[in-house]
Length: 234
Image (tube, rainbow, N blue to C red; front, top):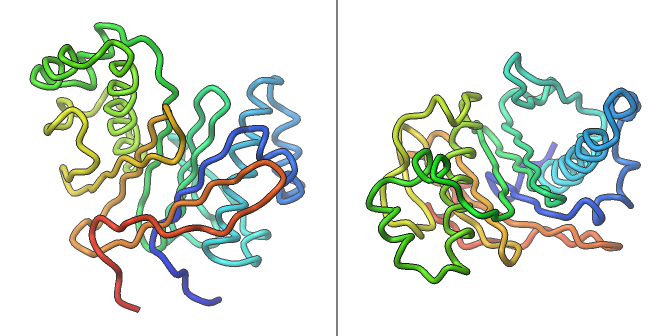
């Protein structure tokens, strides 16, 4: 197996864009989807299809036969390649996945919705809430979605749940990256009006990040995303 050209690949798509690629799913995944209620089956199929698509681009065609399992907390894992981290997120028909060579990883996508006071308390510090109040009304939902995506992505790295995390992540409300408690996170901008955050462990080791968009009826190759930590040595 040839090494990946990047440490972390993030791929995003709509559920519609994944439909032509369901042939990538294994027989077990198709059987599993049939056991879900229709909405959950569609969500599972779209997410797993995009994950298979990303795995093939990050690591090679051999991953089509790689088994995907989950921990007792529902965190997806590569059974045949446990040293590679994977993560999947859905939000109202938008899907994001991450594949990380040699790292634990978490991904979260959030389509903005009007924020509630309970959500603000859980994902925004008092200082960030003051920043939020100064933003135009049309930008506030997107800003809160960013903060919640950060919270969720970091939780997914370790397999915990956001409600059990400590206080909201510090820093500027619209910060695009940061570090906390042995993790590094970065907000990405692949789709207008949608918040996407990727988080990963081992922040002391430089990481190279690539971003790929799966568009309907075509499968573009990953394009480089400006790395936060700089390139990784071969």
